[in-house]
Image (tube, rainbow, N blue to C red; front, side, top):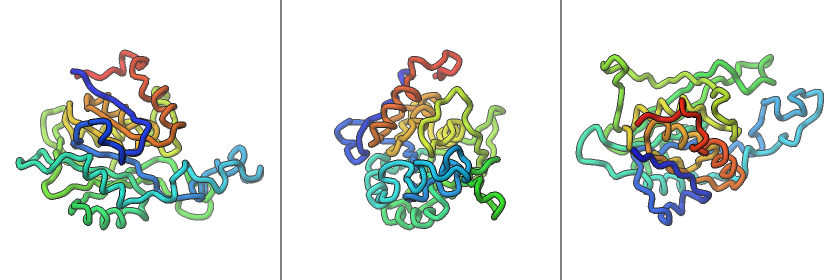
Length: 262
């Protein structure tokens, strides 16, 4: 089966010019609007990761341009157009997944309702490490990530059949394991391929369309491609677009053992 995987150097608002199909799943890691607090208690704030060496060039800087003024209403408006319409039959409905900060979650829920996403399921991702290294001797540090599944009326498509052929419960928390060396590190907020694959597996079938409006590293597109889903993404940063297409999405150079089976 010919599986599409395409990243556009453009804003998702310009989706019409590309004629891409509507998505079964729209999944994105939206900017957390951290602004100049992006690196916070991360050692990268300091030269060599040591606060005795003085501040690095990353101190008081954002992860990327636009992290601080991302318009959530605008995002939901256009994502609603990227997503398939609600079907008549049950078990086929599309959904959105939004990675977010804990502080953003309730704002997203309320904004989502204004745009027709009346229902949601909170997600928690559990790590065995923390980026808040410099606060470790002062307070409990964060070792979780958050997300929200959002849908309109009908419950979204749901795949919970295990290798044993039986249905299994899917909890709203997931283990967060860092990628191995087989995947390039491109973006400071890049999500692990294994996490993305699991989410894509649950809410889509092979051949379905997955769209990432804020593609960053291209990891969502790569995960979808490896799962046999058609994927399309948008990235406004030329830097990340170039790195993603050269490293993450250079599919011809992926080792044979990593090729998908469809």
